[in-house]
Amino acid sequence: MRYAIYGAGAMGTVLGAYIAKAGTEIDLITRNEKHVEALKREGAKIVGTVNFTQKVNALLPSEMEGKYDAILLMTKQRDNAEIVYFLKDFLQEDGALCTCQNGLPEPKIAEIIGKDRTLGCAIAWGATFHGEGVSELTSSPDALTFSLGAIGGGNRLNDVKNLLEKMGTVTVEKNFIGARWSKLLINSAFSGLSTVTGGTFGEVSKIKASRRVAQRIIKECIDVAKAADIRIEPVQGHKIDKLFDYRGPVKRALSLALIPVAMKKHAKLISSMLQDLRHGKKCEIDFINGTVCEFG
Image (cartoon, rainbow, N blue to C red; front, side, top):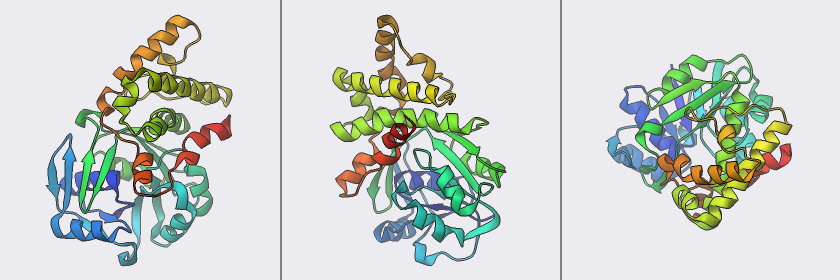
């Protein structure tokens, strides 16, 4: 089996290091030349809530050859059409492209490579990119979970599940769109506010003003999902749509108090959108909050 991570930035580097550490060969592919050079020279250095260095196989896109059984797509969605058309030539006929991006990218990817070859994964942990071979895991090691699903026949579903289990717990979701909305809800509230305030998810949760805004965004996501007849799936065992769906003042006060508790294991997480802006790049707001607006 040949595996690759395309877009080995913050999260891709962490995931690739865990998979390689478990003894499974996987190519880490990124356009960042300095990062590839450092990975080849010194391996992937993972810091933060864990600390280890792992030898990995790093490549530039121009160095790719042959075909892969499964490719994990971990780039930003801005260039998805161009990237997916490029990767199509490197994918086995019975292979699968598993998007580990935020939002709801699967339908548009399926239009390019077909539903059977399209898998999706909502990742419930975060990382910060420090460049030149170094990534920081910002979530607790006991909160490394994946929600995996298919929108068609599900080529290589079990293979990708086994691959992701090298790092954490994988749930194969029958209601995959509902699992996507669980992550979309969290990202819409906390990624956007982390970007606007320049703070971590923990700081957004702790400060009452930003916490109230997060609460209102969560509520709006729940309301839109209900109107679209989408059943939101639990996150790490917690039914967030029940916990944060308020009507009266008592439930509203309770949901506000629960937000810092819910974000405790991800308190150090900084939005990838904030990281993009700090590096002079456009952020993914149209593919996160924008998706909820479109459904609304």
